[in-house]
Length: 89
Image (cartoon, rainbow, N blue to C red):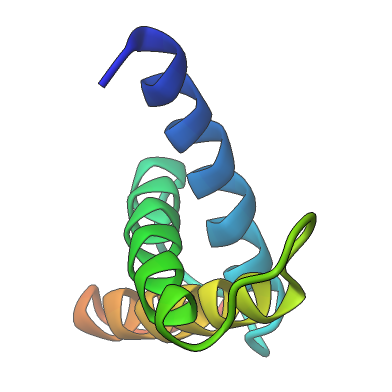
């Protein structure tokens, strides 16, 4: 993997992770690096899954949807493993 590919993976992972957090209700108590990691993993897995079902030119909205859903599931799982939601008084 080149430096450009690595930086691109981090940026896409951050975007996918952030979108995954946005679709979840409430506050998720996980950090930025964990969100990016979940986003990168969701983007990779989502690309593999979408590649089996669709092959379109340009923006593949089905692939993006799969990636965001996987990121939301990943963020929810990680937040649950870290102790769930924090409540403020």
